[in-house]
Amino acid sequence: MVFNMASVSKDSAGNRRILFMGADGKRRAIRLGNMNAKQAESFKIKVETLASAIAAKLPLDSETSAWLGNIGDDYAAKLAAVGLIPARQSRTLGEYLNAYLDRRKAEKSKPNTINNLDRVIQDLIAFFGAEAGLRSITAEKAEAFKAFYIGKGLAQPTICRRLKSAKMFFRLAVQSKYIAENPFTDVKGQSFTLSKKLQYVSVADTHRLLEVANPIWRTIIALCRFAGLRNPTEVLSLKWEDVKFLTGRMVVTSPKTEHLEGKGSRIVPIFNALRPYLEDAYELAEPGEVYVVGGKTGATYRTSAGENWRNANMRTTFLKIIRRAGLIPWPKPFHNLRASCETDLAGKEPLHNVTAWLGNTPRVALQHYLQTLDSDFDRVTKGDSNGGANSGALAAQNRAQTESALICPEMTNATESLQFMAFRRVMSDLGRYCSNEHCARGDSNPQPAE
Image (spheres, helix red, strand yellow):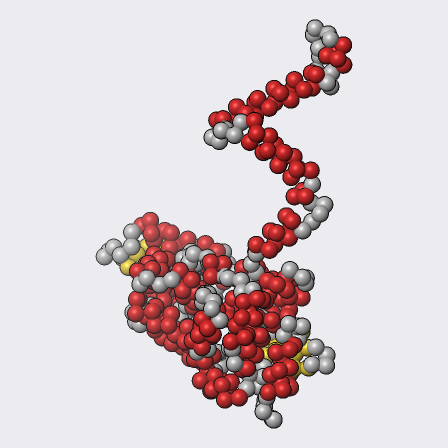
């Protein structure tokens, strides 16, 4: 029996319908309403494709799948009624996004993560409307949503992060079969790095900070700059039971990455630059103190933070310490302490060791942490006695510049420099002639020396 043959008929009122034979051998009809002949014929071909796929138990081709995703709910319901497709699940934007957020809360996602997701959800609902169907949001409307963010004057990194979340929402809607395509697929937020906000904090400047800080803040600064710990999450979570002075290691708990398998903690060396400050903190700690950053100050920061580390608000105090040390505050103060630590280590140790100790990946380190310093240029241009900078090339360059100044100091513009180069070339050729044996014999037609 042939299942994939279908036909189009039209009644006296001009309404068209498609007749086809189902996989069960029964004849079925799909009423198309007042549709023109060309559209009805195209619809019939898709019906034949669907019926054939069901009969042969084969997956649909990409073109038919895309067509199904774009047809309206009314036609999808008619196809479902005759058994050609499953009943379409239709959800509103508000219903879908709120259900997603509830699921993330039930999964105990981080409070900051919930807050960030909720902000984007509220923006989407405000722009499109809570009752908007997921299928009604097109690529054109998604671009308009990006323009909405730009119009609000948000920073480019903020726009990029929020668009990334919106794209994630609709990607999951595709996976759940609510929509066929992600309207945000081609909506690009300009890529960005932290390079413009990176600033190297030297060891000398760090010591100036340590000199004016109280004992608690000396420990905080040392852990950030000399061990690269994230602040406040890792610094405030570090416990004395995890600091092993004898073996020179400490176990650092990382709340930021604990949701990733095997990334909840890492082992970090007690670097030589850090050890004196840890030992001082240990001597000053009250008996029974649990945390390395302890005392009333540490307890206050942890209580204020709770599960939302952002509320610890350590930045304000640190900026005061920076000014007290006679330094100009730099962007992202704690991040740059960590970045400076990673930059120093990367100049001495293999990158896979450095990133294992600091708890990021080589890609993230290269994009958001590592910096090229003036000392790097000095090292490769002045520190290598066998390098070109200290070879004959430098002496030759200096000699040529000296000769130029002695012979013709007024030659300063580009044209005069070219003329002088030509002059030197002629003089050089004359010198070669004079060194020729023919010239030495007094020949009237000397030949240039080879």
